[in-house]
Image (cartoon, rainbow, N blue to C red; front, side, top):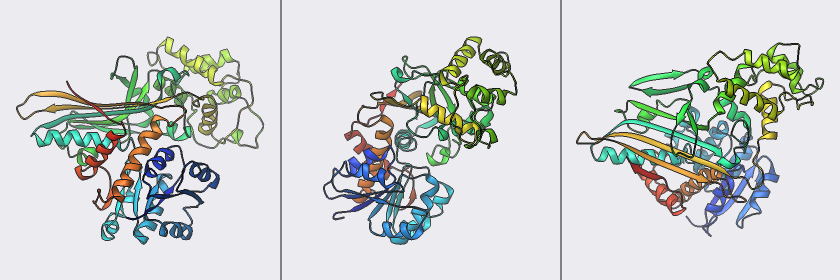
Length: 451
C-alpha cells in the first residue's frame, strides 16, 4: 500500500510507543483522534507525519467520516466502544487493530469481516498479547514433537520496580485506579486436576499464594477471571491444569482484604460523599463504615481489628496494614475529596498518594510454566519468562510492551504479511511467528528454559 493513512483512536499512555513504531516507516501518515483534542495535539506534535483531530466515537456520522478517510484503524479507546469502530470500519472496508480482548459484541462482526476481506486483529498488546504469542509458540512446538501439555500456568504483573514499591500496597497507578480495584472483586475460573474450579470474587484475595520466579522477588499470585476457554483457544484439550493470573508483591492481597472487609470497595452511592454534601474527613468516613460513634484513631484501629477473623491475617501483618491506613491518610482529620461512592473516594486518595514520581520506573514480569509429557513419556518443566523495566524519562515498561506489539501488528497488516481474515486474536502461527520475529528485533525477548 502506497503512503498508507492510519487512524489512531485514543491518545493514552500506550499510544506513544505505537505511534513511534509506525512512523519509523517514511511512507506512513498518522491521524491521532480522541475526544480531548489537547491530548491528541500533545502527542502528535512529537512526531512528523502525525496530525490530530477531535472525535466523539459515539457520533456515528463523525466516526464514519474520519474512518472513511483512512486505510487502517487502531482502536485504543475503552473496549466498550470497539463495536462502534468495527461497524464503521467494516462499512468502509478498513482493517482494524486493538489491544483488547475480543468481546461477544466484537465477535459478531467476524462473518462480515471475512465477507469484506478484512483483518480485525485484537489482543495484541502485553496481556493479552505477548502472553498469547509465547504460549502458542511453545504449545505448537510440543505438539509437533508428539508431546502433551499436562499443565499450563501463566502469571503476569505490571508493578513498580522494587525500589519504587515504597507504599503499603507495593503498587502504583499510571492510570485510573478504579479498574484495578474493581478487578479485585471479579470471580475466577480455571482447570485444576482436570476439573473446573471457581473462586467467587469475595474470596479471590484469600486465594492468593506465593509464587517463585526469581529469589529477589516476593510475589503472590491469584487467578484472573475465566481461564477455561484457553483449553480451546490454545488447543490444549489434554491439559489438566490451566490457570492465567496476576502477580502482586507480598502484602498486597492482605491489605486489599481489609479494604474489602470494612467496605471501602463499595461502589454504591453514599449521600454523605456527594460533592455538595458537608465536608467530611477520612476518620469520620471510616467510623461510618465501621458503624462506630467513636472516631479516635485508637478506637478505629480496634474496630478494624475486630472485623478480621482469628488466624486470617497474622498480628504483625495487621499492624503493618494499620500503619498503611495511616500512611494513606485514612485516620486523618483533613477534609477529603468526595466522589460519590466509597470506591471512588478511595481511588481519589490512592491516585494522589500512589503515583509514579519523576524518575521512578515500572516493571513488567510475565511467566508461563508448562508441564510437558514428551513422546517417550519423559516429563519436563518448561518456562517462558519476560522481565522488562521502564526507562525514565522514556516510556514505561507497560506502555512499551503494549504499544510496540500493537505497532508491529499494524505494520505487518499494511505490508500484507498477516493475511488471515475475520475478527481474530493471535492464536495461530501465521499471526504469531512474524510478530515474534519483529518483537525480538526490538529487544523484547522472552527467556525460554527447560528444567
